[in-house]
Length: 281
Image 1 (tube, rainbow, N blue to C red):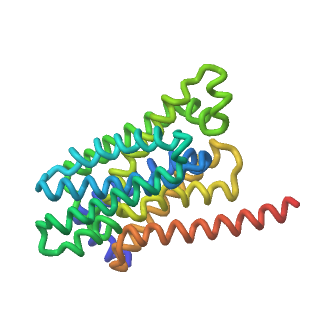
Image 2 (cartoon, one colour):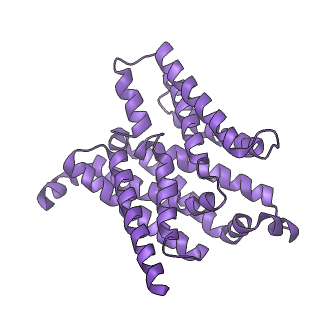
């Protein structure tokens, strides 16, 4: 098994996949804790479907660099989703469902009507579940993912205190002069960037798992925001790395394997949390 892994690691595309996968998992976990605590976990699901629709538009126009359309459209949708979710007539969960289903249906419709591929089903499956896309990354795409990931980490560290404030008590944050709307907007935009770069790893249907599972797993054992965030980041990176290694050795789909490892980790942390709680009692 070690010899087989060493053989695969000689190929650049495998090394690219591991680097990008670890970075995406790290970025997803950082904001995952905030999104879970704000009860806005499924914003990732909604934005991933928007990104799928934008990617369909890019494929219709035969654009070689899909990021030029996918990233701006997803960021704009994140802003609209935040504004719409604050509307008294359209609650946050309804806004996510509306944008999510609409974008997914519109994207699939475009891909069928203006199909330019002889293997439409394979393209859709790869986009939705990330079955092969991360193994076809070019050097330019890897550097773009690295740059975006570094930017996300720097933003999170620099604005950590403000993000902490709007996460736990937004009303108090407003009272002490914090511009809560601006930081909520920042969270939405950064989430959109993470969604776009994560689509190559797990596909648009499984992105929410990268956001939700590490955060929920860490919350089973730790209580402070900082401890949960650090544990979530470490766990997410480990699960992503193990998932990709298992996928390479076993020949299973990358995205589904990573999510399966995340689920297994959640079960372990859940049981550990129950045992820890029982001992303390």
